[in-house]
Length: 279
Image 1 (spheres, rainbow, N blue to C red):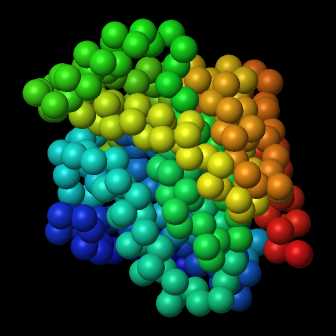
Image 2: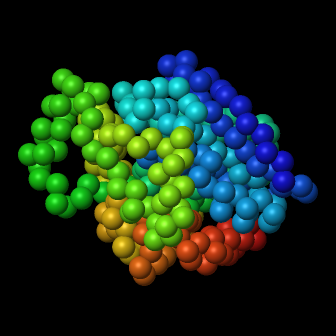
């Protein structure tokens, strides 16, 4: 396995960190990993160690304001800054892996970024895997709270109000400890602007998901406390893909790739990818 890292120029001339892992032999497929809120691309080593020996190259970036990339922490002016940066990253990868099947793998916030990206940029992708996608506004958020949030996002965009509950990422205490002590994981509060932009993006997905037509696999832990688990079914039902599947894992928390049962989850993803490489 070969690991390389570097930076490219993203939206607003920001330096965006990226890294990739290459198999020792020929590359059979490319996995384009889109990470979740407050974390970074280095937290997907279970996926890397599973798929690279199978001949898959894994490419990942740190979003604006995340990990080693530039930008105010957990802040974005427009949600499309994420999707535009992802588009630039994919264009950078293309000549390096020309002709290879590419599968987008998005988790949580990365599932929302990935879903929104797919509404306009699915050509050339073989398929997508979305894990615990943050695609639905929770039913318990009142409309007045959403409206107030939009106002605060406009007048005080960097106001910070919400902190993620680290115990919700996994049932594995070692994963939680690693998350809490990782210097590249942001443990502060999320900004009002990002929260508002995420809600706008979720609302767009609710309306525009029908544009997604490529093969799609959705993974969802039934006991996910960090996103609304019903969003996975909503997305599955609204995309136009004729080749789509949702797998629900009873008892699993948010990060299904980091749960004690991650081997089973990764084998499910492997089987799905292998089936689409054989087509």
